[in-house]
Image (cartoon, rainbow, N blue to C red):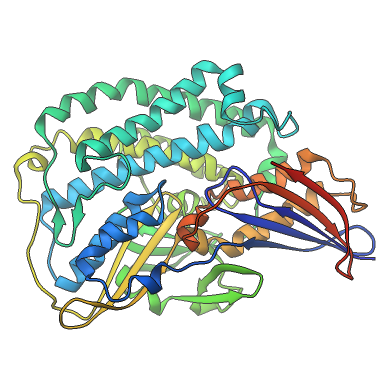
Length: 477
């Protein structure tokens, strides 16, 4: 008799989701589905608003990564006005996005995922959280919290607020960085560099001692997509699209990201509100690709900063092809991106142009369709707007990073379930469920972004027979 196991919702992620695991008559794994149960609505209710309002509106989609929507939306406005952003504004936007990646990655690694690494996947769930880490590893917990604070402080220095800063606008940014903030930011450098060094040393040891996690947490071939510079180096804000396969072959290169719709299709399923983007050239679902830190490092030939370049070389040495396929190593990639971001912040704040240069280009509606693309912490973020001659939005499409990892997240959960859920009789240990959830946490999904809803997050696990009868229920508050 086949059974169905439901994890509802998945915990320690941003947003709501549940997981269904279908067991066959022998208790083996037949299939897994990752459901996003929130309803999306932002694209529809933005219709009728001015495109100039969109940076302020769309950043309200999320409280974790508002900067990502702010910047992608401002870039869509640049495209509608057909203006070139001044160099000072380009650098300032890169500076803010570097701070955004730093604070969000610190949250993911130190707050949400480190409890599994430090306390154990099978430890008491009541203590398997940031408070448990604070109790047992107070110095590391404090460092992680302060690393996130650094990123948020830089965002506040630029935009006036840590969350939802009204700063980037179509054509550039509202104002340059105040010069008195330069030394404050530089004073942070020794501490934040040391924190990420400690994090990297810890995680390298951890994966050496836990090879089964690397092997079983989303380790499969796929395509990888991200932005790069013309020379193939890392770029998280204004680069060109590159796609590579698992053998290191470049599939698409130097693609204008504003033409994304020529390469990316969007499928849907009746089991989830989250879309299933795929590469059109390979069809659905064969065109599965991954975005985010792991993908960005896989498509990049260098990081463009000394310390991050050294780390990237070591990271790529994990695979003979130079393309790392285990989703568990998203955590590793996240730390390397923090290194790059810290180095870029240090570099940019010493460039005098960001304090006195022109920061905004002016223009009107010169195109009826505009596309803005930027790398959010979780991957490539696309905003596309259709406007009339007055700049009023007629249609909006957002492709969120988490959605682009949807196919890979489903496959990751299936792989973990097959590896660890050996007994399908309904007696499931909590630690096994935590491993399955942790497979999703590798991607640091932001379901609030990808479906734009609100709510609370209890946990319910159900075992259901083929006739739909619930034969076992586990509930967490």
